Length: 307
Picture: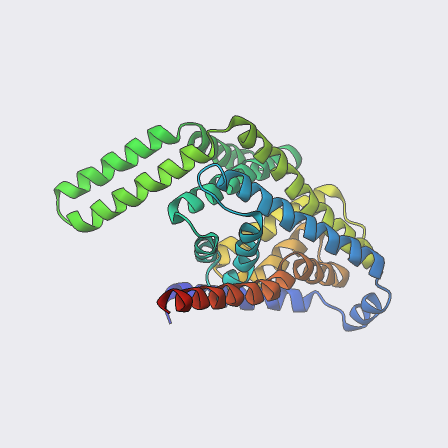
């Protein structure tokens, strides 16, 4: 077992132990019995809108660089939820790109630029509502520089790889330079349409607000009042802990971060697990169906070509 897996296992055990300690079984039973199905239905609908808008943001950038369909983009996006349960989150993101077809690096670039605009919005919310001043400003500057001056960053990285090429590993470095060039072309092509670029920021704001409001709505289902600031803090902590932990799908770490944000209690723990189920884990199940369906389609297509 490598160090990353050991760290992920330790992070999972710590998260689950903390969450278990915060649960009172009598309060848990009462919370589940008195929960509001109407609020849970509203929360689920919010999650559906989040999925559609996130897929739409990727699709808008993607169609700037290659022919594609929204249906295929949506299927790839949903499959990503399943891939992130069997792979580390970052690898899951990269793997789902293959499912949209066309040029892989153009598709990857269009996904990355959409996620970058979302990160800008996340850092802005963190600065405005929570006050993560130093980390927020640094992260915001790095992402904005990458978004605006991507040509300069590309040249700097290409020059660095060119320097390494002088000292050997020419085959590997040449391949990396080729990948870098294709990613840069896809990135610059995707953001060329200024209207789409600005629309992506608007979509990112709506996507974040839907997820944050979803936490509040799920809390209401269990008679737990959560303020906008608490929900936003919980959302950010959930993303941070899941990313750092390395646990596939962030299970346990997601909920741990949420509980730290909205306050430790039985209802908060129930809210965290139900929220993550409605906004993520349920789509992992759907994503698995779509992913293997896409693989079957690919196999049939190859078979028909062979015949």
